[in-house]
Amino acid sequence: MAKLHGFFLQFLILPSFCESNDQLTQATPLSPGNMLISRGGVFALGFFSPTNSNKSLYLGIWYHSIPERKPTVVWVANRDSPISNASSVKLTVTNSSEMVLFDSEGRTIWMAVNTTTTGGAGAVATLLDSGNFVLRLPSGTDIIWQSIDHPTDTILPNTRFLLSYKAQVFGRIVAWKGPDDPSSGDFSFGIDPSSNLQLFIWNGSLPYKRPTVVNEVSVSGGTYQSNATSIMSQYLFYRGDKFYYTYTVSDGSPYTRILLDYGGNLSLLSWNNTTLSWTVASETPKGCDLYASCGPFGYCDVAAAPTCRCPDGFELVDSLNLSRGCKRKEGLRCGKENYFTTMPDMKVPDKFLHIRNRSFDQCASECARNCSCVAYAYANLSNIGTMGDTSRCLVWTGDRIDTEKASSPENLYIRLGESPGMHVPGFQHVHPILIYFPGSNICA
Image (cartoon, rainbow, N blue to C red; front, side, top):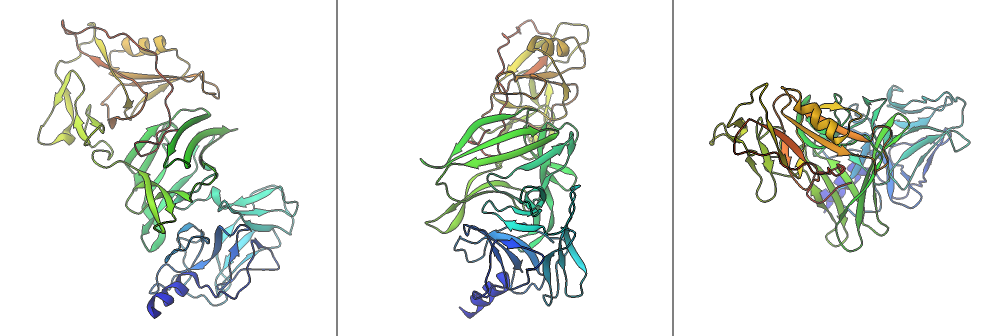
């Protein structure tokens, strides 16, 4: 028991007799041994060391109201600049309305910079019950800086995760390096910089998993329901030139968080008050969901046991090595009439060309008249609140990579060679694509 007690003190550095509140001001800096606690007691901000043998000190936010043996940290300020000596460390608001973490020698370890045009002294930092740490000017309305704009490995409910700004990548969550190492790990999650239309999990600079293709629209709808009272809904939306992701949970739901762990898994976690532990409500699917695991032209069928399959008109290159993908049974011949077959319920492939402002017929024609086009997909967005273009036409001119048959309303139209036994299937209306959270039951 003494050993466990020592661990607790090392992790939180938490003398229970110290006073704490939810605000940090220039007159009240924060030092090891003190905490900020959000007004409703949900979150705490303070200093911690992940293990009792690790002398590295971090400034972070964790759940204060959960009776855990090892508190769950949801945000770390100095994750790549740990402090080795806790003596005289302090977090303070400066007279220029910036927030600075100083080490024992007065060196700046971490800083929340005032990027607004508004200056002046007297800023106040407040820890909210949402888990957001906000630095405001004395008026209380102008936000200088907030922690949700600089996430670590976690997305909390009702907080906005900035995916891109002016079509350029902005936000990513980055996994811890290990279970007790908050420093930046190998895995990250965010939007694809080449298209601004896809969400990726990266392993370093290489694609690791590709959860979905998204729409440049303001969308809502689609839920995950864990029980009769707990519902989680996801949203993608624009605010000016900024593209955000957020999610909400219904009133009375347990604590919920989205976590990218050090193994590269993106999970929706829910707190269980009975077992006093986090349970996985949904996570990135297992099996053949790793990027391009079924090879060119192959697709992962996750309906039952995940397995690699070939579309109609294709066959395996190597039945002993499914990662080599599929090949055509009959080659395409330019100048000859070709046919398209429909693959319903698909997560469409990577490496597409996005053509704007097209109707369904125009999108189909765009592919049909281009001899190098091998597939297309279309989404009608006119009924779900678009920001500009009311359609989304995607075409493919090379290998189709990373395709999956899943619970998605997306149709993929694949070009096949000329064959007397083939016919043109009736083109059906394509429903708007929905955001697919990694996991079989979550859409938004």
